[in-house]
Image 1: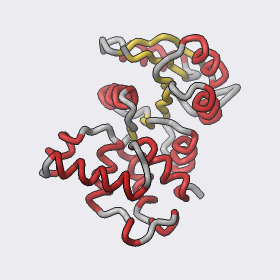
Image 2: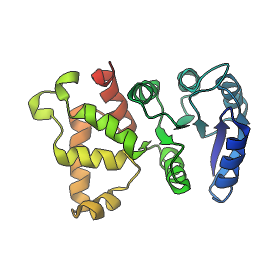
Image 3: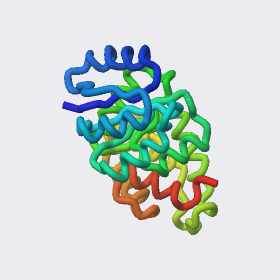
Image 4: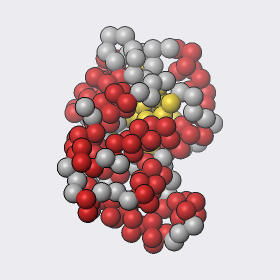
Amino acid sequence: MIRILLVDDHAILRDGLRALLSYYPDVKVVGEAEDGLQAIECVERLSPDIVLMDIAMPVMNGLEATRRIRQKYPNTRVLILTQYEDRPYVLSLLRAGVSGYVLKRALGTDLINAVRAVARGESFLYPSVTTTVLEQLRQPEKWGLSDDKALTQREQEILRRVASGETSRQIALALNISVKTVEWHRGNLMNKLGARSVAELVRLAIEHGLAD
């Protein structure tokens, strides 16, 4: 069972999210908060697996709340659900340690896929958010990659799909390649960027100059 804490300053949105998530038997909403400070208090009291967090809230915003939660409760993952997809928001939140970033215009299926991916310890980025990250990954000189470690077009595509929550089998089917080839490319990505997981891969890229 995936235990979720809903954090948004709009009660009607929290009600809608609770109703949506109730359709999935592997997910349980264990609490709600209307600002970042309340979110931190709820994490301490309820120990959720995932905090589904908005950004713009009174008292304490989602960015600061994410920083504090990730520092004090590293086993609790943060999944951002917001209307904002501007580069500064995305990069700042990735640096703060979020495991996923979904836009409020997403379908319900996108959200549950993100929740499940994050619960498995993976990353999930909404497609347009992934594009923001990949635009920076295509410029290795900004973060110290030598030419021989620059990401190939295929690696960029696989990174985008992995970050979107696709499994190796799904990626293989979409790109008409073998699962073994997908795993080989994923290994190259980890090796080039010195990362041990997809979440670490994205965060490492940010730390090496993806943000201004």
